Image 1 (cartoon, helix red, strand yellow):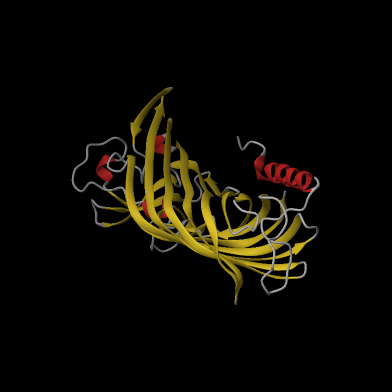
Image 2 (cartoon, one colour):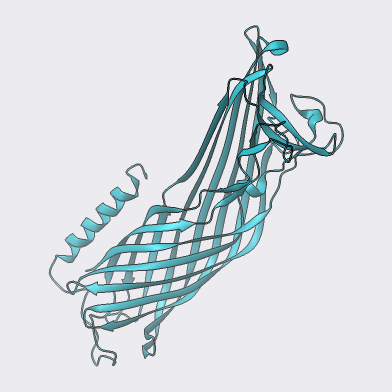
Length: 387
């Protein structure tokens, strides 16, 4: 459905809005520009309106533990060992997106109506790759319960292994909602003010994938070792949306503001998978578990938490015609209690089960549901048409 990308949908909606606005008759989802005093007659215009926006937002990054080391012994904290990837934030920064809103007024005075919206941001991705011919040590660090100390699993090691590792971490956010709104005050200090009540949905999905291949040398000649792991988190928010929005107009200019909070539940979902393979003599043996994904934490897990999503926005508009308005604004959104891969990884490993061995001792790694708060904010630019 979304194969055309948000830019294609945004262009189509904008063209549709302009075409409708060009038809006879004035329309606006609110009264035409008027002074701060209350109009004595009902504003003219139609009842339907549609709005398309380009978004340029920044979203909260995810904090990952140290996943790859180079040099030294590969063990965290050992002399000469440096973190090549991890112990850092990923998938923050700015990205593009799109939002579509549409609505209908029940009465000619435009005092009550309904509206709905959908938005999405581009997928954010972080990629890492490293390789070594064996001249430089390349490793994956972990805390080994068997020795109660930091340890490392080698990907490449002088005289033993050459190898490579690749990591991909992606994040995607989208949401939707619908609301009924009604006028509270036509000429308040903050202009005309509407109150609204509705439904809000948010979806945040992150996926971290790790793959490595090592080719044996010396005592391990003729052996190839592979690992594959995936940590995927999905957060679904469903809630009751309550808030206020208002508009101050002066001539063709308008300043619109919104303040709301959605209260409900976030459904946290966690999926962990991992496997290892050993190939020798043309025969490959595959076992469950990689390094940080082991039989003790592989599977699908879920939790439900109370959550709140406050949101604030403001936008400055200019009425080009009675039916067409252009605008630019800024949005801020905050979401409590989400789970992401950085909070789902357990770096403590019972090494007895590595490579398909029987578990002896503590059942680690274990599935983790360490939550964090998530935010997104940024600019929006768009066009609004009524008919």
